[in-house]
Image (cartoon, rainbow over all chains, first blue to last red; front, side, top):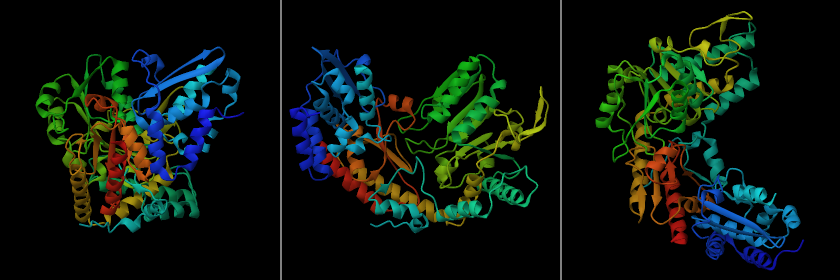
Amino acid sequence: MSLPVEAAEALQTFRNASGWEQRARLLMQFGDRLPALDDAQKCEANRVHGCESQVWLVGELRDGYWQFRASSDARMIRGLVALLLLRVNGLSAAELQQVDLPEWFTQLGLSRQLSPSRSNGLNAVLTRMNELAR
Amino acid sequence: MMIPSPWRADFPAIAALQRQDQTYLDSAATTQKPQALLDALTHYYANGAANVHRAQHLPGAHATQAFEDSRRKVGQWLDAGDSGQIIFTHGATSALNLLAYGLEHLFNPGDEIVISALEHHANLLPWQQLAQRRQLKLVILPLDADGLIDLAAAVHLIGPRTRLLAVSQLSNVLGAWQPLTALLAMAKAQNALTVVDGAQGVVHGRHDVQALGCDFYVFSSHKLYGPDGLGVLFGRNAALEQLRPWQFGGEMVLDANYHDSRFRPAPLGFEAGTPPIASVIGLGATLDYLAGLDQQAVSAHEAALHDYLLRGLAARNGIRLLGKPQLALASFVVEGVHNADLAHLLTEQGIAVRAGHHCAMPLMKSFELAGAIRVSLALYNDSEDLERFFEALDQALELLR
């Protein structure tokens, strides 16, 4: 399965990043570019539980293709979620079922963010996405 | 000013963590272990494991001897004397649940259980659930501005309906000794039972349960440089007479029939099933090690480190401490910075601190905070650990601001 164009660009950028500091800066930049959710969407029903910070995730199928939107009050998780959305937005339902998201974060050099002891919530976001896509 | 720890080399994991570029400042969650404990565990398993209190054979006799020696050492550590018994449980949480179930028969609807606003979930939820089972009122003692239980308020809240008071000796979030003497006196004046959660307090200094005068004192081994899976419940003799067995099974029984049984008195009557034998023996070795240290030197070291920590935090802009920490730890938030972001960047730099609600959600809610960063200290930490933390903190804040 080929990468969406924006995901391929992000992958290139993260592969060129050296050290935690640069990756952190990139994460914040990607997070800042995430389109804002409006207040009505930041509701309890859209909240992803199991995160240290508040994370909201909304998803809908448009003409057979997934469009997710998300936000968080914390910047690092917002960046991680932004990278997630780059990878999955525009995929068909069948493609979304097949995509290996942990592998995506491994490619980005961010696999540690998915370790079970992490309370940042990325795992919870992936679980929620699976539930929405089921 | 350098503050070296003369005991650092006694804890092999500290050097191992350092080789992985990890600075361990999360000892209020769990501690690293002294070599003396590792040796005791190896010795026990290498020389013949056996169950305790049941076998007539020699390995069983050795294990039982070592197990009961540990019980005696714990009693000495708490200066329990003949005033009560030491019961081994599977953790401090288990010990508090044992109390909440084993004392349940004493409560009638409308009776009151008093706890404080700063309790760890382990000393909140067992009582909250007991209150729900028995239609009791759970009374929460408020805190003053410094994070101490407010005695002026407590005077009015501890009353004739109070049947039990359960409070922490030292808060795992606020790092302040709580005014136990006054609180216990108020509870006793109402003939209420008293429970002290010593999970954090027992790690710092020595405590005399007879002088303290509580009915029950609870702590967990793993926070006191001992093995995990082991909790300690001290109970005063008179109070233990009111405690009923909670868990049932092997070894706690005097006589069993198909339809009824009689149970042993404390401590064995509250130790159903095979206890964590190796952990009990290991805790004994840890206490031997700790008893061999110059307690004054340890306290002075911890105080110096804590002072160093507070000064460093105070020297930085926008840092807000939770309460007024006196020792052991400091929890803080940074203005305009999400604690999850700060935690992320400290982790990236190999700083092991705790972030989040610290198992005290209601307390965090009362501060209107979703979480905080907690730096906690142990006797093996030194000023270099704190310097590495401060460097990482400065780097993280520079990135985030």
